[in-house]
Every structure is written in C-alpha cells, then in structure tokens.
Image (cartoon, rainbow, N blue to C red; front, side, top):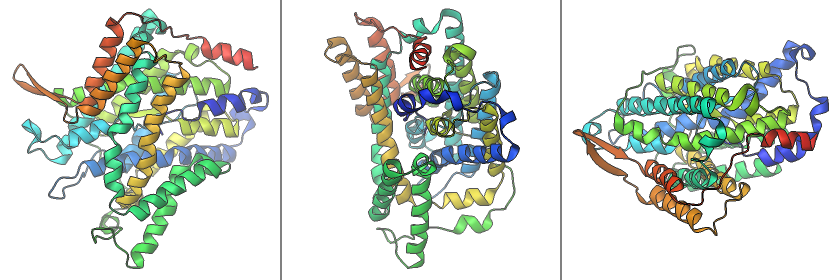
Length: 473
C-alpha cells in the first residue's frame, strides 16, 4: 500500500532496538542480501500489482475492448523498480525506501476511464489511458515544484497551506469515492469476495512474522487457488460466467519487453490527476517520518524532504511518461525494515532490480491478469476503506480541533464536494471543455478556505522526528 499504515506500531516497538541493527552490506553476504531483497519485493508485491489489475478493470468499454499497452502488471512492476532506483539516486543513496504503485490515483483513473463527452466520447480505452498517464506526469511535476519551494522558503511556510484539516478529509474522500467500485466487483461472486476479505483480516490480525506483512498477497494467492478449484469443479459467477478466463495465458510469451505506452496530454485529464498530488505528498511526508523513526535517522533533515519529494516526483513522472501508474513510498517495506532491522539501502535497490526482472516475463503478467473480479472486489473492499481510515487517523493524530467552526467548515465542504460532485464540474476555457472531478473540487475548496478563513494556527515542526528520536534513545 501507498501509506504508512504501521507508523505508530513501528515507533512504539522498534525505536529502542537500533543498537543491534545491521546498516552495512559488509556484515551481509550476497546470499543474505538477496533473501532480504526478495522479502522486500514480496512485501510490496500484493498491493503494487493490484493497482494495474483494478485499473485494467476500469478501462473496459461496452464492446469488451481492453488495455493492450500501458497500465499493465508488467509495466507497473518495471515502473516500481525503476522508480525506486530513481528515488535512491535523488536521495544520495541514503534512504531505504521502496516505491510501488499508488492507490490514491485510482479515483482519477476511474473518472477518466468513464469520460464519455467531447473528444473522449469515441476514444479507445488505450488512448484514454494514455491521457490519464499524462495527468500522472503533471502530478509528478507538482512534487518537483513543491520540492523547489521547500528548498527556497522552508517546509514550515509551505505546510501552512496544506494542514491536516485539509489533507485528512481529502484522503478520506479518495477512499470513499471508490467504495461503489469495490461493491460492484464483489457482487460478481460474493462468497469469493467475502472469503478474500476474511483471509486478509486473518493474516493482518493473527499473522506472524512475514505473513503479517503480506496479508494482501496471501489473500490474492490463497483465493486464486480456491477460485481455480471452484472453476475446475464447475462453479460459476452469479451471472453464469466462468470464474477464471484463461485465454490470455496461452498466447503470452515467456520473455518480452513490457508494453509501454507514451503518455498524452489534455487539460481535462491533467485537472483530474494533478490535484491528487496534494494528498499523496502528505502521505509521502508520513512515510518519511515513519522511516526516520524506524531507522533512527532524520531523513526529513538529511538528505532533506526536498530531495525525497524530488525522487518521488521524478519516479511518478517517469512512470506516467511510459504508461505506468503513479509511484509512492510504501509502508509495507517500512515494516520489513523494522522486522529485519537491516536498514541498508542496497538491499532495497536489489529488490527494485528483481521487480524489473519480473516485468520482462509476459507469461507471469498474463497469469496475474486472470485474477477473478470478485477477489479484486474483496481485496479492494479492505484497501479502499483503509485509505479513508488513514485520512481519519491523519486528523486524529494531528489533533485537528473540529470544535472550531473554521475547521468544521473546511472539513464539511471537502466531504460534500468530494462525495457529492459525482460527475464533476464541466466548463469551457477558450473553447476547450474542461472537467474538474469531485476530488479536484474538494482539494481546491479546502486549500482556498484554509487560506482565507481566519484562525489558521497550524505550524509544521520539521524537527519533530529528530526530537522524538533523541527522546526515545
């Protein structure tokens, strides 16, 4: 997943264990480093490949046309691996973070996939996907702008415009806006979907060791096996269709380049995707805080938040440029750091190389693409809810006082805008039809209200992590 869902757990339980950590590859032989790299790869694997599976489901039209290039499992794995390497270069090879595909942009992909007016009315699904990726490129460039601003004026001044009272409700809206999709996919075969939900819950709550870190992957793998057994036994989905469609597997080769697709740019698609960066940048800051607390080094100060944002933004822009989904730092891999107590960035870079290697095996991607819709629905049932829950946690942990009228008004307007404008807001600019999605409207409204309403006393403490580390030591 693209959020640091385990931050409090990591801070409370692992901050005092830095004495016995392994931070240098000289202590590890190549075999051990490879095993640790595989562990990192599997930690991110389940959530990362789920994004293209969900997106491919969005980009299907009434004729049955599906994506043939870009936004596929193989392209996504390549972008995750390459994006991680880009991030490490930008952060002077110091930060042990892995970048996987972001769930926050799913709402934007879904919106663009369902555009049916103007030039989008007769557009193929592959072209729609290309324009969506163009929006991802611009969203990545927003990170670069923010990195430059932070470098020039300092993070505290910038964060006054993006306090938790704005970003928290925005993250809540991102998850809730996708809830109907999870229900629709689950309805294809509710028993299978409910089994997927239960599996994820069991591994997440009662799992031990590595299994606890990969509940999503375990849900996908185990339920896929169950689906195979049911399909062989003659069971079908609610509508009578086959549970698994094997058609794409036989035609896929064992080795081949991922089906990259160059992005395209359109103002409407840009306005759908770019505002989402406001929320994902907050997730990025949360992940950097969690990694700093886990490793015992203040990465927000050194190499600096401007550099980590630069790396995340370039990785996202690169992914969108070649037809992949946006990247983000992964909370699951923070859990691996805490569990193994091996903080060597080289191990994470090895995991990135493994992801790139897997991306050039089309047969593997074809098998993954046969994942039953109901299993996707069950997994996303949990994930979409978790996105919203993380938004609530963002509000609670930052002690946003909703008894104050200004905060209550900002949150209320964001919620109604983000969930009420289902079809967005369409208008014409110099003869060009432009559509603002509900999330874009919510982000703009929240930022403007926070800026103009009196009483904005939010102060971002960039030294908070360093103070906590010293206190825990």
